[in-house]
Amino acid sequence: MMEEARNYILALFSVLIAALTVYSLLRLTRNFTYKNQRARAVRTSLIILLASGGLYGMHWLGKQSQSGLKQAEGSLFISLVLYTLTLLALTYLFSKLRQILTEREQLKELAYRDTLTGLLNKNGMDHFWDHCKPNEQLAVLFLDLDRFKSINDRLGHHVGDLLLQAVGGSLKQFTSKGKRHIFRNGGDEFVIVAKRCGRKEAEQLAMQILEQTTRVYSLERHELFVSVSIGITLSHGRIDPMRLLKEADSAMYSAKQLGKGRYTIHKQGNTLQSVNWAGSSKAN
Image 1 (cartoon, rainbow, N blue to C red):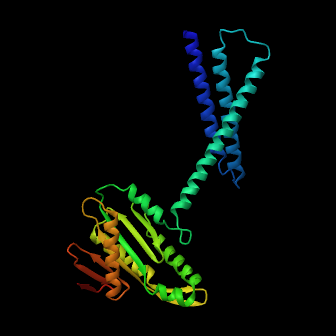
Image 2 (image 1 turned 60 degrees about the vertical axis):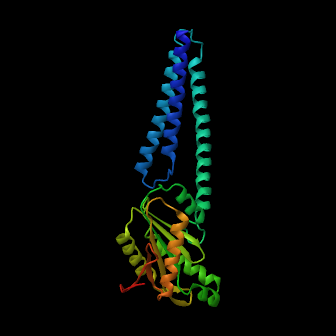
Image 3 (image 1 turned 45 degrees about the horizontal axis):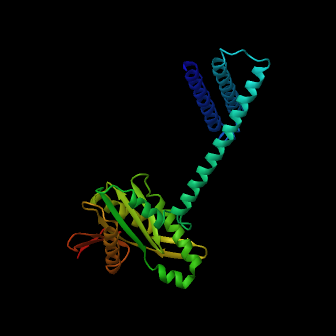
């Protein structure tokens, strides 16, 4: 009984060594494109040492499990062949698993990304809300391009798409991993959700966005001056995504009515403060 348990433990260790060896080899061979010959030589040497060490470790454990048995003639060669086949089989399985996981991540990325701007889309926004902490402090900024419909109708959807790509590219610089998330809500609407963001920080962010996006865009043969209008709301207590988006959207439309190219803050009791990108403010 003790002998069986010992052999079982040794077999488990042998499988573990094989798995670690294969994992390490896959990590070392990933993106194996070095122009520096010295770096290639070092990595190749490490690969050979790892493979040799893994085979030796498996062979040593195999010898320990067979220590009470008479060694058959040619058993060393047979053992090495079996261990090599085991490593090759595990390498194939691990590489297939990695390929499946990579493809899964790519499909997930496609599902959550807007194909035109590369920003997160509505699916990405739903995913964000689903994983958001219930009482996290958030600032929601709702952006809309001024005069976009007239540009789209007058110059065509192709120019409109180019404009959306240009604005999306300007907005990407405001992305901050784990803190700020930017979504294309559809059409010419964009949403920015900033975590751990109070009113002062939200206003500073809105001013920076206005300064970066309100400008002349050179699109093929067209020179177009485009501004954006921004509505801001802040979370209070338990997060209600629908309410936050509705408040920010309402504030954005108020900014358009007050002159465009500005941001408006939604406040409790429907009191609004509008500030244009040049810094002048107006209470309503």
